[in-house]
Image (cartoon, rainbow, N blue to C red; front, side, top):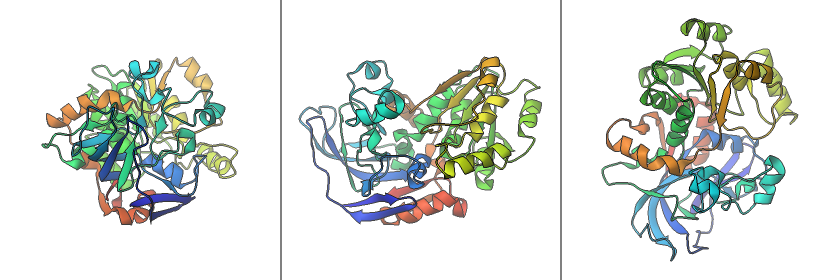
Length: 389
């Protein structure tokens, strides 16, 4: 089969590799019908996530048709059309039973590796390094899906692939980010980053009752989409008066909640952002927390900072004093996708939201390396790339 394989920093290639097979009675084999390039994939592309190996198959946003199921998978049958959550969950551990699926105790076979870095292991992830299980990803013609009796959700015929695809990751991620804000009627939510997750987080914040959403980015096409599609008020992230303007827009109080939808590779032109670039370049700092610092400074007293943007290791110059003095609440983590797929699918079915509005580029799988380059450089107004195997 054809699959996109990682070979090093900024080096991904579509190659012919062996097709997967069932390894466990709870496995399913999926023929991929649509997959996507995620902002999190760029962290792998740029070489910032450790324990990648040459030949690893990338991709964690995918859906497809069931072609084979293990003997213990009774909820799926051959021919079913399904979306697959990016985090793999066993369904039986304490965390799965309390719907914290991305913290699953049993789905990462390389748990010892993760424990050395994080203290405890979290769930295995598709296409996201060996520290998270080394599972082959979905930017391929076929994928083996472990614990298929827990993760995949069937998609009704009335919903197109493009509408359903983002239930695999970024739609639930955006919704959980907004839900973590504890939004109340009249609240203002500021969202740093108007990439795919940020765009959907704007819509989700309004769905959950926000009165005003402020989108913060520097890419022209993203700002236009946030304003025109999301009905957000827009600020430029490189504006030196950003924090002052946020105060002005909230009557001097600051946003009730701030969402960092950027994560470990934040861009910026300020002194602290340049400092982060330099330290990350020589691996004295794993992540660039420029946006996180701004969110902490901007958030109102007693407010919430929600972090769906991925962080991988250690950051410097973290303003813990401001966070402590202002009494901020932090909520973050990989998304518990299985908790959200059914209710969000119902929202799509009712016509409340069509997540496919973020798609700007459609390519064949063999064009995936070009897709990464275009998405990474934000060329041609690129916001979201989907690939059809």
